[in-house]
Length: 435
Image (tube, rainbow, N blue to C red; front, top):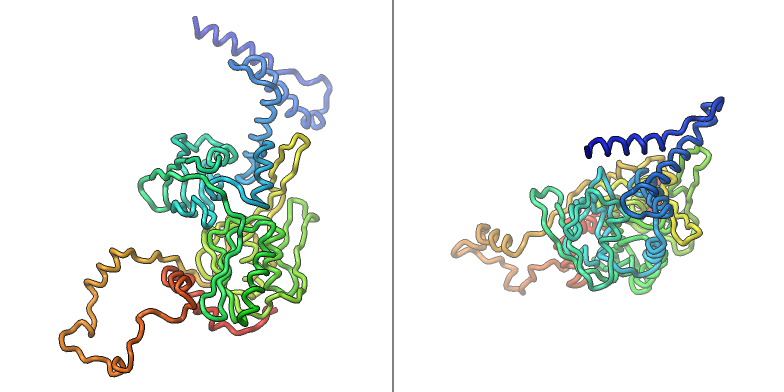
């Protein structure tokens, strides 16, 4: 009996959704309205017959959200609160855990943790898969919904179930939400005259921060080389990627973007500035967490023969999103173009391949060091070994004196990519871009 009632209701609803096309209507002309008519019919049907009360406004908003999320992982509908937060995150501090995430084949992927944020300190890495958020599976969550669940008031905690790259079992990581810092550039002298510039993301202050910190350093020391660290940089604003690249280039093409219309190509070029560092040797560090704007910089410096790239292949986000505000305070983020390096390379889903592909090797733990020392045998360990004649002239420290201070020394000791970058930048000639 229940089956019969269900069948009758189904037939009734089906008859409501199928409206005959107007007699004599031209199929081509009518096709453009057919989809809208079908959409309107479905909205009316759901509003009328759905088991719970739902308004037409809610249905249309959810439809817009679903429409954009089905396009690609980066297009999205932004409710008023999310739109406001997006604007704040590109210009000031915001609350959260500090990760850039993407959706691939229904899986929530960590693009990159932002340095010095709760996510970074908790050990999240590029390529990690987020399986659950506070015990709720992410398989059915849209990207925006997942972001909203991860973000929250400062001091509150979110539990992420994470599957690290290459791991067999997921783990639960409890992370206390905090204030995400707005500082996007950090510098550290590696040796006298050699400066490390780490860019953690591209917000609207990045280029000014970079130029100010380099200028501050050059007032005290002539600069002989720069290690530009773009590792784990999830990207940010396109104009900042262009102006950062322009800091190291005299002029010429940096990047161009193009949508589906061939006439939509837009070139971004550098301008000659008095404080441009066009003849200082540069080595740039990249990895799988370098995405979007970071890839624009890396690609421009590589194509223009301005910098040697060391590290690992980048993330491969070569699409441009345009953010449009709507009258009600909400907005949409829509993929409108792909970007191309000066040589015409599209990095979308390909990434930037470094000139020297050197994987990061984690430093051994104290336990590993002790074990290695126990089983490492050298001449000095032999009984009655001969002393080095120079030892009597004074003891020499076993630590390298290359680094300018203890902080830099520890950084170099723990980071094989940084260590190689420093050695390479010291050997590069002071030449301008090769044209």
